[in-house]
Length: 130
Image (spheres, rainbow, N blue to C red):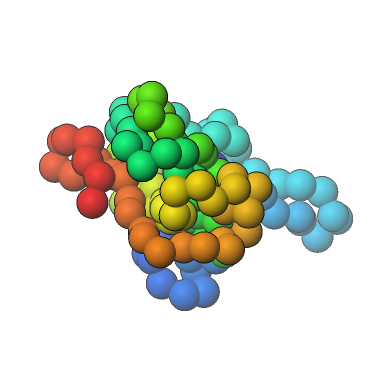
């Protein structure tokens, strides 16, 4: 998402919760950055591959409430995960929670089983995963 509260410039509470579109005083949707698209293209990507069977990765919504709402199934084939660059909100990364192998993708989006967290982002000019 390429829209967030322009006054939220650091990863601090509650500003980190203020992502997305807003309703103005007349109840109309408003884009905080009218010159930016709704979505943000990543700088690159990281290929994730599972040798343990199908694994559900679930990306959080940030900025926003960090809910785990964006599920991706990682298999033995290469699966692409987004990598935002440093111009993304407050220089943050894309955060993923990795569920145990065999966890249903539909449950992953609700954060049922979350043993591992990782993130992708651009660091000093290179794509990476920590």
